[in-house]
Length: 325
Ligand SMILES: *Cc1c(COP(=O)(O)O)cnc(C)c1O
Ligand code: SF4
Image (cartoon, rainbow, N blue to C red; front, side, top):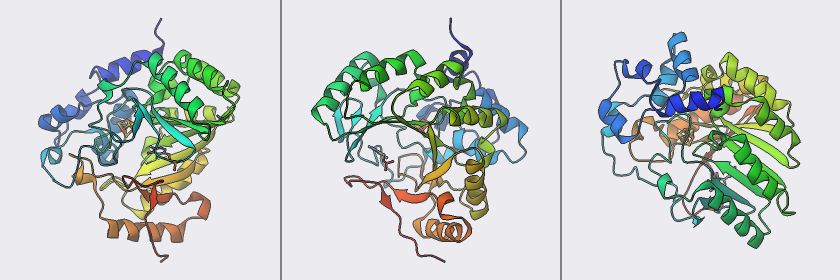
């Protein structure tokens, strides 16, 4: 029997929750044709209940600005297609490998740098785990497996368990990292089965959430995060600096404090990847630097995310250099 989170996910993917978005004045059907509207009930409820919900809406609502062509904004801004060592396995950085674990997310974020990623060309799940294990055996310097987007928590726990049962047999692998937006957008997913799996997993566990604004931490999300902290999993957060969402010192500073309140440390603040159809989210680098140096002057070092940029061909994310205020 499908569990309630699976029903919720199915509804989101089949466009069941989109009415709240389609009824908005700035909604664009032409933009929705470029990248499907996908939102969860948790998100639409937050949009409805929150008077200043524009900061949420902008992240998920197709807008006419997406249809404007900007030649500097590319289909694959971070060079992921080139880096596919095996289908779905991206080994760009030393010691860690990123796996495109799933072809879908619980929400479609309009600024996503993988919005044009050819997920359908990926291997089936069983084949993918098999080829991952083969790859890891050949590359013993890899100690960390990163499950990334599409959102890995759209996979069932049984499926995740099958992967980690195999990872555990490799001495070289010490750490499992999960990049997921699901704890906040589909908190039902954080069920007992998932929590048991995490608790029992004999690896270092890291969950990197994706939260851009404090309003995304709804009461249900807060509860889900609290449960995860009790599984021995380290919680980190990555945000994307987005125009008219979080390009503001107050907003980012409040976010850092709120994350900490829920057991999460800020990790990365990404400058937008220049992906086609997302130009209207860009904060220019000079403004980004000004915001960041003000943020730096406000926050204790441990609550200051690293502001980084993905530069194709580099061996790590590149820090954006900012002078202190
Ligand atoms: C961002 C990223 C990682 C993780 O980088 P960290 O600096 O360890 O967080 C790994 N592989 C790829 C391909 C990435 O894009
Ligand atoms: S959850 Fe992450 S991978 Fe999925 S659409 Fe949003 S930004 Fe992209």
